[in-house]
Image 1 (tube, rainbow, N blue to C red):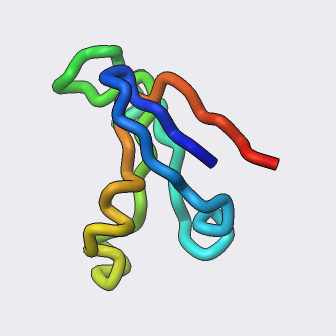
Image 2 (cartoon, rainbow, N blue to C red; image 1 turned 45 degrees about the vertical axis):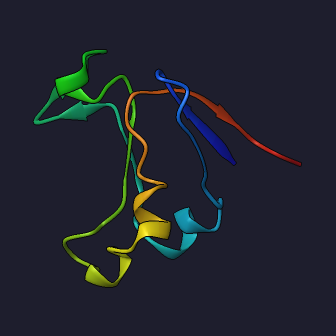
Length: 76
């Protein structure tokens, strides 16, 4: 899938990642909605489990952790 941020940054995120890792499409933090502000990273933030799986801390995976997501396009 292709994930596009508010600033038009785009990343390809394999759907398989959601099966291989506990990837989160976050819309809240600490029970509060992520707002559309730079410091809040909202409205949606794709988060990988970097703390629990340090092997994911590489450029390929980190570029998939998109914040301020405005659109998700699914390819056939």
